[in-house]
Image 1 (spheres, one colour):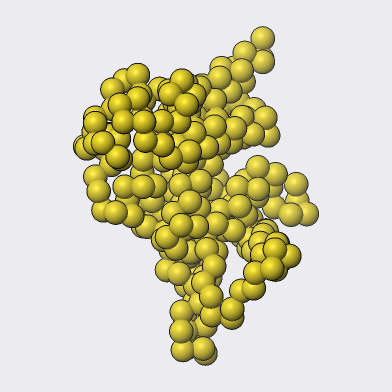
Image 2 (cartoon, rainbow, N blue to C red):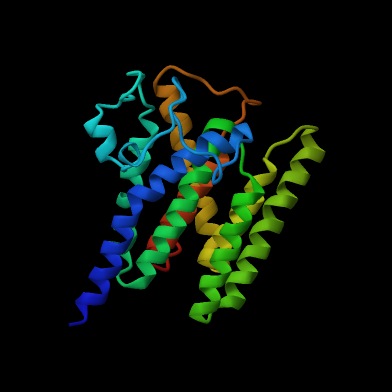
Length: 251
């Protein structure tokens, strides 16, 4: 029964997804504020009541409580529900694109990218405490698959390439053009996808950024030349799609 191992990995990834999403929601709020993530007990943001087990069941608790604290009735941020649904959806996507254990590993990649993209979108922040584990996990997977060399080269070239580009822009324009975390994120993409995938990651990221700018313009908003954009979000999209379907022209 060759389908059984694939189905077990799919079930495991999708079942774990809502709990990962809940944890990512917590991290996305606490990390920018410098608050501890794993030690402090979760509590209502309005009345400070510590949350019990019944309040922490992903998705079901939000639906049962109708998105409000059962003590004070304050509105619960929908970001938790969105992430609790997004994480199993990404896991399912990875498992369908890559059946077996590889799809589960893809879910781990997706969850890391999702948190990084969220932090960059809201705070223009790609912390090394998250980008470095992305690189390490990608290299660990590559080593297990026997392709460490090309993926180590991808991580090196990804970091060096964007670092040099940022340096050149700073020298030519006298201001920052890329955030320091972008180079680490692309290094993570190279670690997960290999050196040959770097052009595809950058091309998809650039196309995603252009599409975002066009949508803003269509909605009547304009981007100033010096207005920052969360390029990490678009890099995350590039890494994810390249991992799923392979480098452009080679899939």
